[in-house]
Length: 157
Image 1 (cartoon, helix red, strand yellow):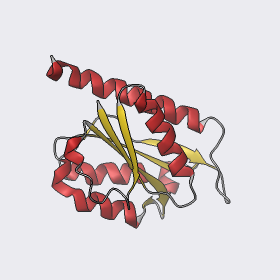
Image 2: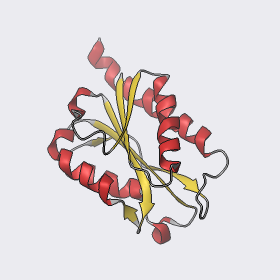
Image 3: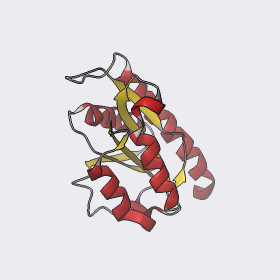
Image 4: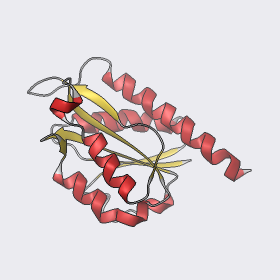
């Protein structure tokens, strides 16, 4: 299985989560991890799974992540995707969720959302991840890889 993790980050916490998710996915197959800025010329159709992540700001997704998702548009049609974000430990109706916003955009383009969006929690400013979030992100990545590879397995036979 070949996966791509594309993320935006402002304070480095989302990058840490992206790395942990990539580590979990790596137990299942090959993983490439890129910022949205470096992923501009990547052909998403070459991957079995594309994971998108970003920090939650202003109740949703940051402009660089939103612009990237909108730019790839229909190229994501029929591809397995998953989304994650980093956000404060507030109810979603208060904080919003970049993961949910990214998922909504991707679904409009016809992506196959393979697993529910995930949020990883940061503490106030200066932001830091809550204890255990890196381990939870790695486990989420591993579970995501297992789920996608089980869907792909019948195609490989």
